[in-house]
Length: 318
Ligand code: HEC
Image (tube, rainbow, N blue to C red; front, top):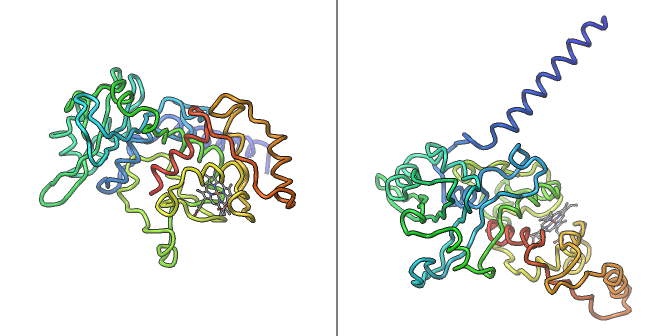
């Protein structure tokens, strides 16, 4: 083969690669529609926002510019008690809305209708931000979940809603899922229970409508570790998760899962520097039977990456 053909081949591959990169970068989750959005699908897209993976909006996949989930036990405007507590999705001014808010037809029949007629989501304005909630309604005799723009319908402002929730009831779910993606947790864990034997332990498989507008879905393709789709239903302990992420061997002696202690950052919740060398020395003494208890795991800072990862695991993987 002459050199000319190689040149054509190289150019062709370059073009194809360039074109597919353009699709990835410019058209993230705009139009991924499938079935009628379920509660899970709506919860996922509202808590994750427009896009979680690699895109021109967040080219270094830092998890910036995402909405914040809060669990409200009182009305941010009137102060009335909300029982049982309700999730709300807070979009500060300028944060990109979830795909279903901008492309309402992708919510699916019924969900779209109610979200517009009762939920007023077509009155949402990205520049001034908004707070969304989910409600149950009926459409042609079927029960559907739909989105409510609580800023229009109930007068909830993003700032007022965050204040009413307080740090206790705030969950940085979107940033947490970003960390699942960037840390490569999907290399070992799936988010897709497969086949009947699986379902008995890992729980029900997802529905089609659980994925409307989610990007990326992060099903995973290969499993070296338990499926995580419903892990918080098996184990909802924040303390266990904290120990397990710091060093899985603290709670599962033969675990092959890596340590994620670097997600704590340099300091703990009280602002003290985390002395990893001291920690390791004490841990090794414990492993070799020289002390009875392992060292205490540092309490994560509010703005640490591990806090967001645990928020996502415990809030979204139920
Ligand atoms: C090298 C493979 C590997 C990687 C990478 C990995 N894990 Fe694991 N993970 C495991 C194994 C094996 C277990 C089961 C033993 C254990 O609990 O440590 C596990 C257990 C878990 C559990 C408890 C599951 C249950 O059913 O109780 C959670 C939650 C978890 N991992 C989350 C994560 C997250 C989040 C990440 C990324 C930050 C991650 N894992 C990365 C291998 C891995």
